[in-house]
Length: 296
Image (cartoon, rainbow, N blue to C red):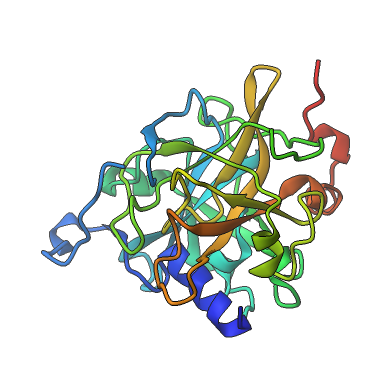
């Protein structure tokens, strides 16, 4: 796939190209143009912070706080650090944008309203893993202005083991129920399939196998991540809790004549978090062993 076409798919999946959901500081400013909300991720089920106590929502303001646009899903990975997709916070030239543009609503299974704005966390630093040089490095760490109390959210641990096609995984987010559709007001989750099909490499030269920087998924059921899910968690269960296998990056329809880039007949890619764990630990200034979950 052509580099610029891939970037456009990534941006559309964040909602950067397809406007989704806006919170206005002054509710009277909302008009009939404010985006409607669907109730459901593709083939997803409603879920909550009991399953996803680390879930976060990334918003952008480009008018000095007059309004905030939801753009991506994210995860708390440390008391003062968030992990999400690099393309969520990058411009058209794949360069990281200013941290001052971004806000986080953390530990909530519903999208923010005007009453939540005062509780938003701000971003002081954005650390990239090299997205400008490779789409496979589609991951960033955001440093928050203050630590997140455990009463609000608890950091996710990283899954450190081999990713096989038999590993049960699910993806969660606030994304659309169909490509280009409205986002979901409520957090949704759906089961997907890890794949090692030849199509994984055919549609992405950065993918060689699921032990590298990317995990591939092709779902015969059509279960998938979509618009607004970018940066959201791909998880497996370990020791009775959900741990982070990867984060939503991008996908493409295997019918190259189609513009429907999520759902049935799509190949999707997730950044494998364990591949980047030592880099993440260096950014957070912690031992990487404190970030992973070891099987009991």
